Amino acid sequence: MTFNATEPGSNEHAMTLAQRLQQPKALLAPGVYDALSALIAEQAGFEALYLSGASIAYSRLGRSDIGLTTATEVAQTLAHITDRVKVPVIVDADTGFGNALNTQRTVRDFERAGAAMIQIEDQTFPKRCGHLDGKGVVPVAEMQGKLKAALDARQSSNTLILARTDALAVEGLEPALERAEAYLACGVDALFIEALRSPEQMQQACAQFAHRIPLLANMVEGGQTPIQSATELGELGFRIVIFPGGTARAVAHTLERYYASLKAHQTTLAWRDRMLNFDELNQLIGTPELLALGKQYEGQ
Image (cartoon, rainbow, N blue to C red):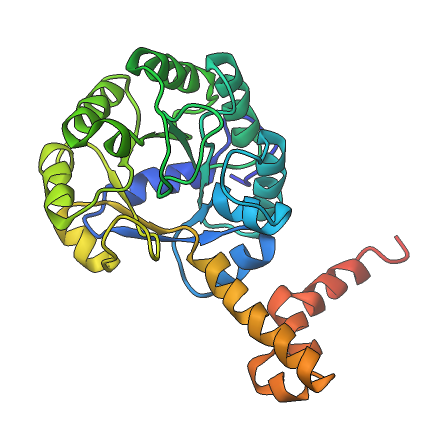
């Protein structure tokens, strides 16, 4: 079957993701924020990608992850990515961008754009990065309604729904685990307990859920959760490991130094050994193949 990102129910990528999550080895999904970062990550050999809402805010808006991005901006970014890469994409849908009906529209739009898994969280709006202070969470029943709406909205059961709770920072660990139980009861495909604070909390979450449903671990450099490798997290019981904002932080670090060098030297010569040249970049993005394809249609 040829995948068509605009055809509901044809999400072949999500079927591959569902099958992959049956394997014991944790799935490591790096954060991406546009088609170029996704292409390079795919070429590096990753089996799945994570489209970070925070990184879309950073890269498209130059703003913080405090609920400023829209569902349309995320869907457009997702569509560009799935048009360019073949590996499955897990996409951050924030709070569903509204109530249960908004969540349904978000799921339909993201599924059409090629999402393999759609993540929905229980924060109040406007949401904020899961590792920032000052978050709020909606009532459990409201979040259950959103999750049931999301499950009803998808055209294919192969489009997976990931439920995230941010309650640990607001209500504590035990209420967060209770929320995760309530969301699991809705029939979601994976769980994400955000900003676990210690190895002990991570072990407790895995002891309660890892044998029943795929659990996601979120690694944020400088965040609340201790950074561990995907191998270590897999041994704990996590099935999905994401480093969502690391890509944007690495790019920002590089750009700071690149622009400082260009300003100081008035040329890129000092950076030539840390850059792709014109031909190398065109090779990476497949320009020769694209031009060859175009020639096939000349004179038709």
